[in-house]
Image (tube, rainbow, N blue to C red; front, side, top):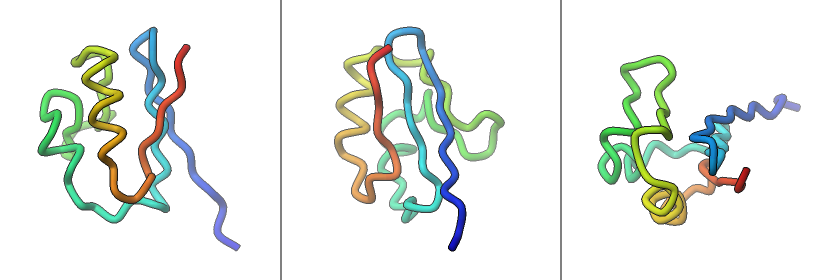
Length: 72
């Protein structure tokens, strides 16, 4: 069984949780918040570049469930 990978990125108010094994690469995140999601950079998720409300709205549109969040 494949080990589940979970990556977390926080802006101090909200933690973005990314599960790469669930990701279907629809690109909704990259197109919605280009200042946060850039697959060419490390780390590729920079939650400090958007408001908590912007992040919540975008994460709720993730079709695969690979992105979720928790409030800090």
